[in-house]
Amino acid sequence: MDIYEYAMQMERDGESYYRELSGKAASAGLKNILTMLADAEVKHYDIFRKMKEGEPAQVPDTPILEDVKNVFVKMKEEKDSVISDGSEIDLYKRAQGIEEMTRDFYLEKAEEMKGLPQREVFLKVADEEKRHYLILENIIDFVSRPFNWLENAEWYHLEEY
Image (cartoon, rainbow, N blue to C red; front, side, top):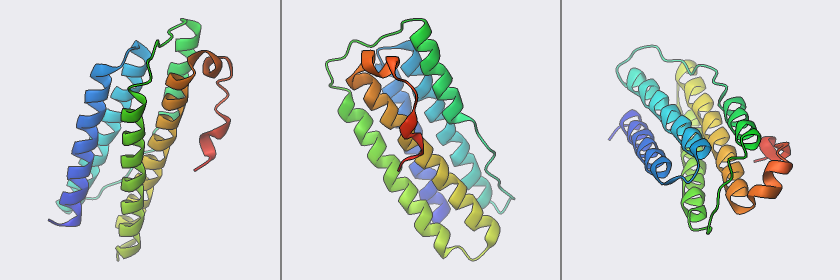
């Protein structure tokens, strides 16, 4: 399997996992965020498909962090709380681990790319995977402690990783 096929499969698997998580989410806001993540994986899939077919591919700037932050703000305004027994936290942590592994893979492959445009695409997608990791971190925090989290949703740790 070539690198593009492998990347496409990873993105397809990510999309499926996020759609599965979305179906299990206890809150409309969380469903929305997980659907955004699934849709982002579809965009990544399309980017790698274009690259495989020899078409020019670019990673558009996406405001996913801002969009997700807006969903959390809306959840706070609408008092959309999540009553959780904590069982789904492991699912989110698994997704976070996958995002980290995917990011590392793309960074490694970027170093192997001979062409600058392909290298830049892999680096940008790796950066988006990092954002997904951070979003999942916030979901884990939110589900773990919804009342404190919503009161202090300043997202100070979004740039850490």
